Image (tube, rainbow, N blue to C red; front, side, top):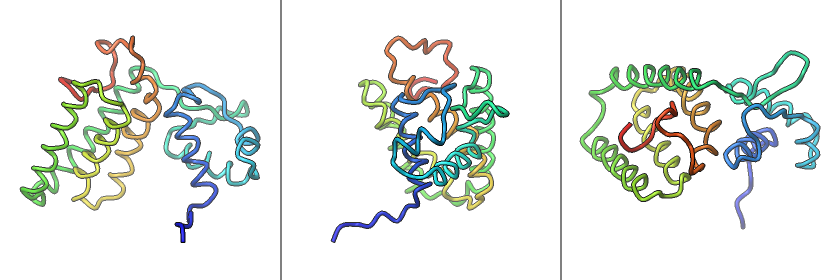
Length: 187
């Protein structure tokens, strides 16, 4: 028997929209409508409406009055600020539980960092780097148990900073020197 998909339609729509952002089908500033997504997925607008509210709460979609909903578009300063806020939250969360990290945890973090360095220096697929990044930060935040801090961190830098600009990571001519996004090698 194959696995049953237990996710709600709205959860699946969230994943669909996020995948569309990662692949560049949807870009920062693009207008997004319930009707268009519902028609594309052959579902009613209710789950799409719920999914868009979830994405609004995560900061990935913005509502601009009566003009509609848009994929959030941030300035370089806002991106930098989101990473700063995330760094402060993550740093304080880790510092508060530093004594809970075992030698095994430290070795795991070190191994992940080494894998990131190898992947970055070999121009590996950015999907792999993104996966390593998620594993690294999840391990850092795994000891705290403070879900409020974890959610604020996720919203401030993981979701906004990484997902909204994921497609840009793949652009060969991207100006990395003036780019506020941190890199895995040397920044």
